[in-house]
Amino acid sequence: MSTEIRLAFAHPAERSEATAEGRPLDRISLRDHIVEVEIGAFQAERGRTQRICFNVVVEVQPVTGPIDDDVDRILSYDHLTEAIAHELAAERLNLLETLAERIADRILLEPQAVRAFVRIEKLDRGPGALGVEIVRSQDGHRHEEQAHERPHPRLVYLSNSAIAAPHLSSWIDQMQGRKRPLILCVGAPDVAAPQTGHRMTQRRIDLLAIEQNAWVLAARDPRCVVVSTRTELDWAMKNGQICVWAPSKIVLDAVDGPSAQPGEAVALAAWFAATFEAGEMLVIGAELPDNPGVPLRAVPVEQTEL
Image (spheres, rainbow, N blue to C red):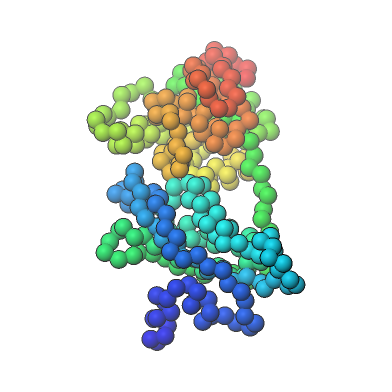
C-alpha cells in the first residue's frame, strides 16, 4: 500500500516505469512546465489568469535503425509543448480533466507515441498544488487523425423586425433548401436590459438578453433549435439541424474573443461567422458593420425572396 501511495504522488516518469509491461519503451518527458492561463469553473476564476503546471511523460516505440542525429526520426519534446499550447489556445476550458484529455489525445496522434501520462496542477488555488493526472494509451491500435472538415455554414442575422415578419417561415424554407448548414443569429429584444454599472456583469446580462431573443425566435418556428456550444453546433451542422446561436458560452470561453460588444449584435454575429468559417452571412433588416471579416449581404425586411 505504501508503494501505491508513493507512486500516486510520484512524477509521471516513475508511474510509467512502475507500470511498464513487456519490453521496455523509450520515454520523453516535460517537467514543471508552467503557463499562466485563464481556466476554471468557478466565477472567481473568470477574467483572471493563474499558474498551471504541466508534467508530461510519453512512452514511445524505440527507433529502429540508426538515428543519425536526425530530429525528424524521433518524437521531439517540442511536440509536448505544442500540444499544450494548441489546446490552451483552442478555447477557454472549465476543467483540468478536459484539458488533460485533449492534450493526451493530441500527443497520441504521433505515430511513435504509445502511452501518455499527463499531470496538470493549479498552483494558485490554495496552499498546495491542486490537479489531475491521467494515463491514456493507443491500446494496440493506431489512431489516425481525422480530417473531418467542418462544413462552411450559412449564417443569417435576423433583426427584431425580421423575427416578427409574417414571411419568416418562408425565409427559413428557402434557406433550408440550400446545401449549406443554417445558423440563425439575433440581437437583444427591444426592451432595455438591467444596468449594473460594472463592465463584466453588464456583458453577461447583455449576452443573456440576446439568448432570450433566441428563444423568442425558436418559438416562432419549431425547426429552430437554440444551441450554445461548439459540440452542439458541430453536430447540428453535420445533421441538418437549423440552429439559433445562444452566444454566452462561446463568447466568454473564447481565448481571442470578439472586440464587438453584445450591443453591436451584427458585428458580434459576424465575428461568430468568421470563427466558424461561414461561406456567407445574410443580414435581414439591419445595417452592415465595418470590417466584418466575412462576406455580408444585406436584405430588407420587405424582401420575401432570398
